[in-house]
Image 1 (cartoon, rainbow, N blue to C red):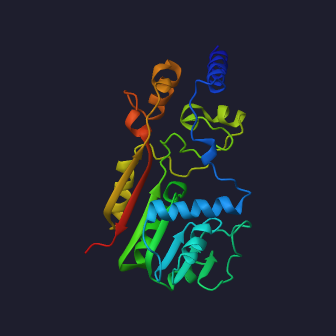
Image 2 (image 1 turned 90 degrees about the vertical axis):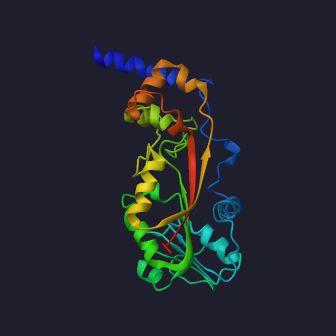
Image 3 (image 1 turned 30 degrees about the horizontal axis):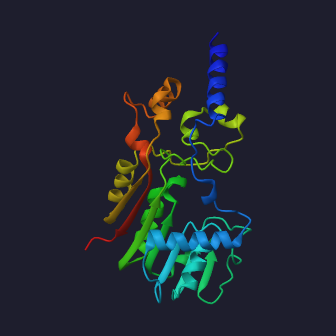
Length: 266
């Protein structure tokens, strides 16, 4: 009987998911084309403009968790004295080959090559939420940061409408929070986050305090949570269960990103 009820509930979830009523996670026109170097460069430019918003000329810059390296590449293009992109694994689609220095640009998986420098600017873009060791990352960055340097952090909490990073497969807001594992598997939507941050401001404050870094600036980017999620009992109840909350978690769900500027204590 329980299995029958579960199947019926999943069927109802899928009916809602396939309807036009379920809001999108993100504007499809804003999703980066993974096959377009031009799109990736434009995205990197946007990351530096929005999250760093600082003249990088003659500065030493580290993009920690660089992926394909486009942010480090763009920092070099903007006149950085040295731009290093570090990641734990090399990427076959990288903008330049890993471990091959190109003038003022280097992508590397060797933390030893990273630590020979001290940095004016360290970028942590959408990194802490995807690591199983965020404190190690913050401590590394603190050790490599110049006394007057700054760490620019963009967090993308799991509680956000697109926090599961499944929107390229399933572009439905909060689907990663509403659907159970089997339902996500049925839609081939793999959620890969290591940190399921459901209470972002509290969680990140604990990270930064434990690392000894000081929050110099904070910007909370919020989006309205549509009535759809609150007005449908099945979805509302699943969300309240997910957050272990007796009330609808509207505030947590409204936080899409939080940008921080961190520094060393004076």
